[in-house]
Image (tube, rainbow over all chains, first blue to last red; front, top):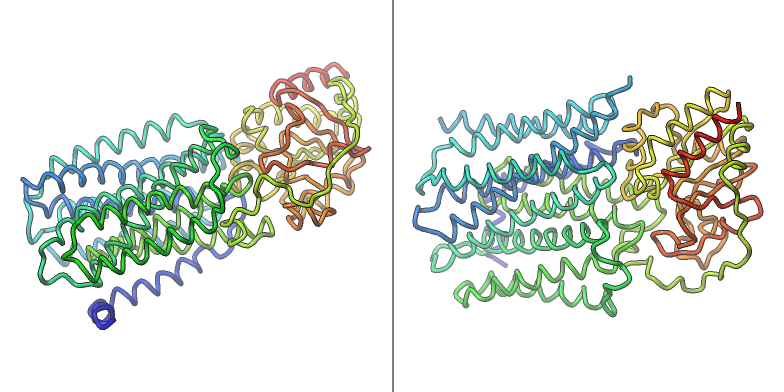
Length: 102
Length: 462
């Protein structure tokens, strides 16, 4: 248990950011018209692709003969990129349809 | 250099926040998506150029992965039909979870033999592995179900709640054990991964029917959480905030969807819409069919018509024909509006997207409350491929599994027409007494063909 509290202590700023972000997330989309539920879900989904940053950091910080890290990291960047690019592109396509008329 | 990088990450986070905010309002939604995308692009560039303490950069591997992923993502996003959008979102989401799994496994591998490994970091990584794995297999299964590759009725597990609880406890115990005993064989990490992947499947298996969108939204929130956990591991604020924003907003969206169906999240997760309709009254009676030309006369000479679209319209890609019929009827002086149930289709807003694609004007779309008000003064309510959202059993039959769900009460209209391919029950597998109601007529056939036939019949009315 001590180890956990020490970990929390050492990462207090992160914990603060986390807690504030939770509240921010709840508040940000408190009321959304049903029309936008699907695009919003899709847009949020694209943002969750931010995990790709982790894959990039992982590959960059690995040594060039660590093939497990390189190959899994490479797969990770590909998967993350599909999530990011596909997610934003699909969201944009949906929203374009609303734009056509006024 | 370092300080500019961190400032840049802060800008990326602000772009995410403003983007999400704008995405929740119709006027700004499009620019919101672009802002969030810009934030993501900025974060990726910064992650590429930030100075690293160790490692050989290995840019070739990163760029190869990004190019492959970028092209696959862009092409599939361009090609996918609007009707298949929910599955697409689900699979994109699952791949994000897969990314979290890939990086967590490598990190865990690196932890082996580390003497100064903190239990907190180890545990966070194990949690990222677990949550990412559940989001991965869960989303892929949701994709399979929505795409029709996997049938709800053939894939079943006995006592799903017991199985799921057992797996969940086993995973949590495994994570705690592994974090406190990092010198045990690495096999443990794979075991946790394996059981988490299985849990993702067993978590989604019992859920079906109208609940699929709720699950996708929930899995979306999970991927966000996995990204945030990985953010703690990498000490990256942009991952932490981005992930948590998605986790929180996804949870809110999930709850909103459950509210629209008048069910609790727990009820959805343990799979309330099982195949057995329990004590629900058996529906019996005769159905009355109506021909296309009679329907055309009925519609053409009424004053006000409400169209109730559902997943059947999406499958038949009949939104353009619906719009054509609407224009034609309007030119005859008939007032036409669309009643959109919050969970019609496979995702909230699914019908709005489809009708917007067909150029239907935004102000013709009525939400649940407005629609129910309008229906009392409606001559004909015509149901295009919807079923569960107009099932009066939700109002009248306490034994029905969907009892309590708000529905479009179309029997308030003077006459109802239900367009359906066959007498098969809806996605939730529940009988619909509406079909047997004396006010109702059935118009069998493919939605697209039938609507096209209606259009030409109405034209002939002169």
